[in-house]
Image 1 (cartoon, rainbow, N blue to C red):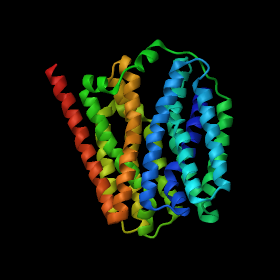
Image 2: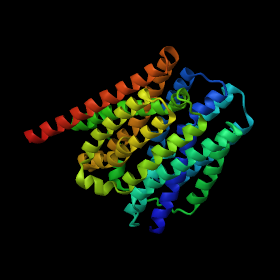
Image 3: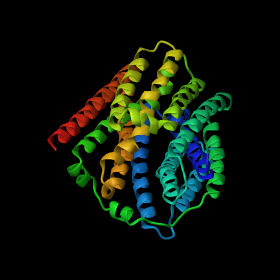
Image 4: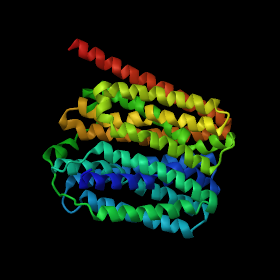
Length: 390
């Protein structure tokens, strides 16, 4: 790999290793300091909403150019995340610690858009960055991180969650210091940011319908991931099993991300997104029917045709269908699907889990996956009819 691809590989990899703290061990940590499942769902939903708002504000700041470039913004959010995680090592009062943890999640999520911006800024500046390989670094490092954090928490308890995050953030900072930022702004980018969601919905109804379907798939994804620990505990698992399960799912994403361009030559991006819906649905069925930890582990292999297909195909789906003047807004909508899905999935899953139990919660998530898949299929049909009419 070229130097710039290696830098992006490490940057993206360490970022997703940091996210393992918030996506993989949020429920474990908050439960350890006394929060109920319903409270965790509400807190995660609030954190997701504020994360989406933060990403939009930081993206606009980066688009304006001037002193604020992606590197300075990334460093600011990284430093804030470190500070908040350090606070968690010394503050254990439940209300304060829980608030700090969610704030750390928000600041961490604030870095997310820039993991893509960095790669494409390098590419547009003439450096041969392979985005697929860089994104594969994210899945690989995430897999390693969730497994090792699971081992550490089993041996030393929940304190290892913020401690691991601090170490990973410092490593990310070291990599970031080796990377160069360009202040170059493309005029098309400045024009694109003025485009609103309503205009994209009007011009691209099939695309808008696709985003609704993806929101529901992510309601499934976030709901089941947030409560994967109780799902595992029901069949005899523990936090180490949680780390192993997340590691299996993350490592299966790597081959898809490395070879996504070759896969797209055989199967179109919209069809990959439809397949991902079926992948999420059958994953939910396996969660519901599981009688052992081994079956849960086996279900994680479906990540290759669920989340991996989504993460690989979604950027290409938007690029293939949306005109340049609307592309930034469309890509932002695709990113927002994850956050909106997190709000819907975490809130409703927490309420159902507390009120009706774990099996009912899994059934709800299966319903989200089924509905999302049907809506994605409708999006494909709408696009097909539009193509036939033209």
